[in-house]
Length: 300
Image (tube, rainbow, N blue to C red):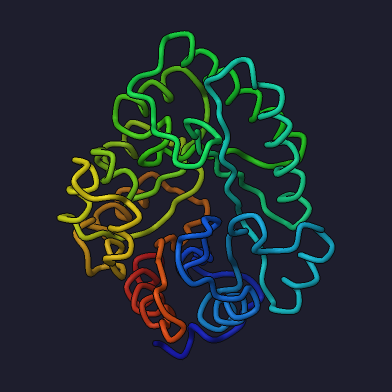
């Protein structure tokens, strides 16, 4: 690992944050071994540029003052955080918007400026993505995204809607409908677009400057194909190392990032590679370091 990665700077040079997901952190209880927040933050501070994403609920303290103190101790800042919400059911619009508002308030209080929004099918664990939303459900979804933008504006935050495999918005048709039917910005996640059968470069072109946040990752294309066709469970694929160190998979990361550079994208990139840890001696830091060695020169 280049020595310069361990240096603390007054400001990030490459605008690259690290996600706790790279350390196997996940909100699912059966995901795998969970590394302590202290260790994740310490290692992120050692190899990164002082920026992370918020992680799932519980990774950082619920009280924003405690979270800020913890981040200061590790010389880290939070740049973005995820929230999952059911957006297409009109009857639960109020509670879902309140949930998003509360999360946006907390994120803003800990210093984040971007809320990454994923539209989930239901709040029931293991809920299956609906085949196709009705026109009325799409209208509800798009209207609620507009409301989320207004909520986040009050907290001085921007919204980046994430097309995500298994979510309500995932593939090319969903993305086109989102772009045509709303003014929302996008979170570009290389792996999840490929999993859903979308071409990240085409999404960049069609978004026409509306990319607000980028999640950088790389995948084994054979495992990704099996997940997409339903012959392999997503969680099992992650356990089989579907997410590869950047440059060691088939996502053509350099070409995607060149396409982003051509749009003059000036937001944050996040190294976001979901990992499942099977044993106490699993050490994800080596894979993270290999990814950084590949990505940082592309951002120079």
